[in-house]
Image (tube, rainbow, N blue to C red; front, top):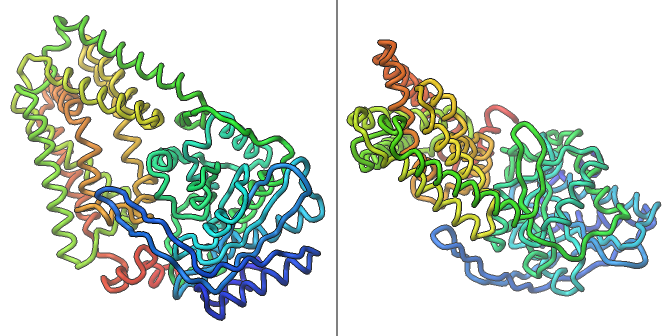
Length: 545
């Protein structure tokens, strides 16, 4: 904590007097431990363009930086593992969590490894300059030195929650993932293998925003460690030492130190892997070919179930008079949610306070889609046709197969589970049995409606680039499930009608939507001016200073 307090006394924007004072402080601490650092001048560094269609287009540029990287080399022989933490900040932020805490962790690791040098490999610790303006210091180091066997970036470690492992793209495969997981076990640290972030890193490696991205660009296995809970004081004047969580700091140190000191050889070759999250359990790391094969077989089994049951009684109450009605329900629900978003923005001159009411906002979206599905679906609930089942199979199978072909089998799992569960539910003769068997078919919805996932996507400004932000996201998430939901509510209505309770479920839906809508458009904790200046950190001005 002493290092965090000493570094986070002032903002450290690159090429300024405070950033040079931070460089001098880090150098002085290293020398006090008997370590002579290498001062690596940067000068002008080219920054490559970033192009993500329909999301962001950043042209290539160059940065002139007066600051220097500080490099420590430990160990005498073997392949090199690089650990990076940037010491600069954005304007107006003292940068305790971002990123003085990570610098403190690497200073302690350097001290420990000086006393007990690593065996069979080298460790290179890089205190990088000018990360906030384009990973400048890390890119300079990666281009000027031989590729290491592994690069690990520590950025925003030291807050509450588990340690998140982010940015593990295609180069972190089966053997390397298992090596990393074993280091987490040996360090006795709860590490969250972030599956959505891994999928994004595999699909869009150019979108990496921390220093590990400079090494990923050069085909080096790399990943990023940060604290799991979204940090609302990020890039603000409230990113001060009192926000540091000692348990988070200790966890980050123990895991990073184990990665650095472990004598176990880091695999030099690898094969594709899938990370599978077991509900309420650990992450299972499996060969991607095996997971893909199981998923494809499951899709075929679902098709066989539909074909074999094409004349069964269980298909008679399967849905609406025409699949177009399910699409109409989706369109009406999407327009309702976009209208709510538009109304709340105009009412407060402020984006919806999603960061304050993640659960309520998600519940509101769910309620809107459910009510429209019930209203439109009830128009044809007595019809006897199989279109909803077939349309569900086609949509979910197409999505799952596309994700498998993109080597994103982790994301294909929820859609395949939902599809197979729905087809099995179709075989049940009694309505109450169908309702129970149907529940696992909501798995894909639950995965993508996770408040934690939506909160993190909001925090990283993913929705800022998309028209109508969250409303558009909910629309895309719900679309594949509309035929399943329509079928479900027809089953539900039949079940209640058998008990003369047909009018009660509609009242529940109306109350649900009304209550959550009020919470969703509740007045924000800070003004529009503060929001656009401080983004998600604005609430600290009023409640967390």
